[in-house]
Length: 124
Image (cartoon, rainbow, N blue to C red; front, side, top):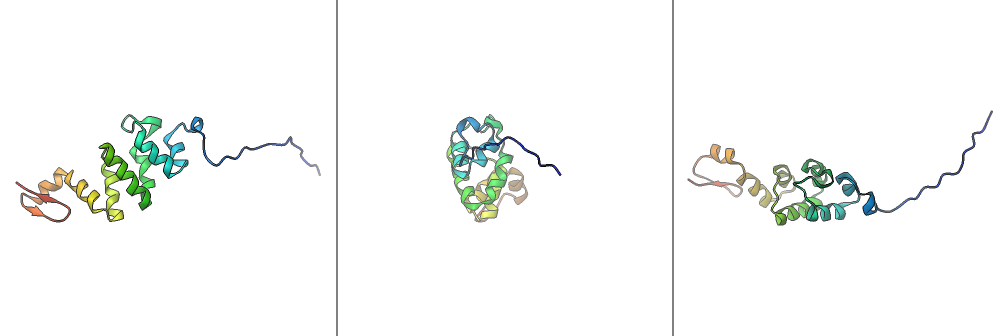
């Protein structure tokens, strides 16, 4: 029997990524909620900075606390994504649900000229 020998390998374990290591939105998301929220506040989301798409954000929205902060940031920036607002139904966010339903012209057409509820109303 033989025994294999190798030179020692040293690993540098860090608590978080440095800014030079953050090249994609996946890197940002991996850095945690605070880094992701900061990115949502400051980045060119519509321009796809760091490869961002709203689809990459959706799995993070399952956590209610993150969802509520993220949707607040997007509201402040005047950005709207139907699927992000749709998570309002998962988290009981009536304001987001009403905003989403207000942005659905086909729903308003189907409801008719006179419909009123807490989430959606139509008027002639």
